[in-house]
Image 1 (cartoon, helix red, strand yellow):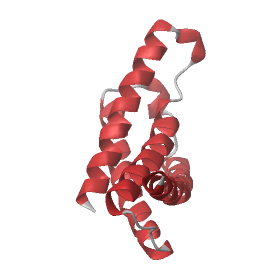
Image 2 (image 1 turned 135 degrees about the vertical axis):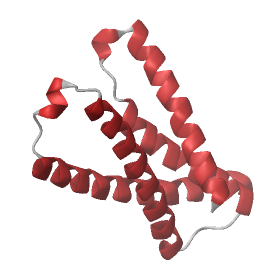
Image 3 (image 1 turned 30 degrees about the vertical axis):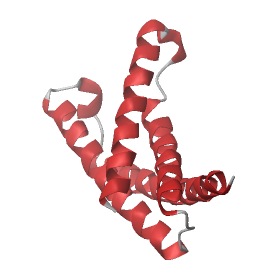
Length: 132
């Protein structure tokens, strides 16, 4: 499990850096870095796991991986958000705490589902490439 976490966050950080560079050079494109980094990292971490083990994962294991990675992602995002709020960002100061909690819960659920689906799909792809 530790290797999956390291793979996931290493890829997330790498994707974040790539998207930051793209946003710097092409500011009109915006920055989809957070969402795209998460789904790409889940897929690639699954591929790495599939290649390492050579076996498909059970549905229960995929849910366990997704829950742990989502929990860690939400905690890290909360820490970053807390730092931004403590810096006195006027846009963040106007947010209602209830709306913020609801949005966090909804995004956490969507992240859980995306990570679970893409991790398992990545494992299947990793196993297929191993069999070639």
